[in-house]
Length: 118
Ligand code: FES
Image (tube, rainbow, N blue to C red):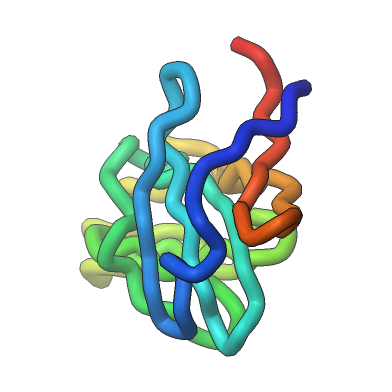
């Protein structure tokens, strides 16, 4: 594990999002209701980007099959509900997987995240 400085804290105003690259990972930083989060920018279902995913009830919702992942711990709240029928089939051929989330801290005006080494 290594704390990595990724962004100035003032760049992440409420509602803002930024994708940063740390090693091979693309990590989505977001400010939701004045709380900062760092999650993988790759949906664990079919590796699609989460960049534009809506936030609903504290979870980020994948734009493709609408799986929802808790921003705090990455746990699955909903798995592939969309589109109806096809989504169900997709969910049956791929087991639920949590979304990796990363510890984050702000220090001296910068955001640091703790990313495991590859
Ligand atoms: S790619 Fe995200 S739920 Fe299918």
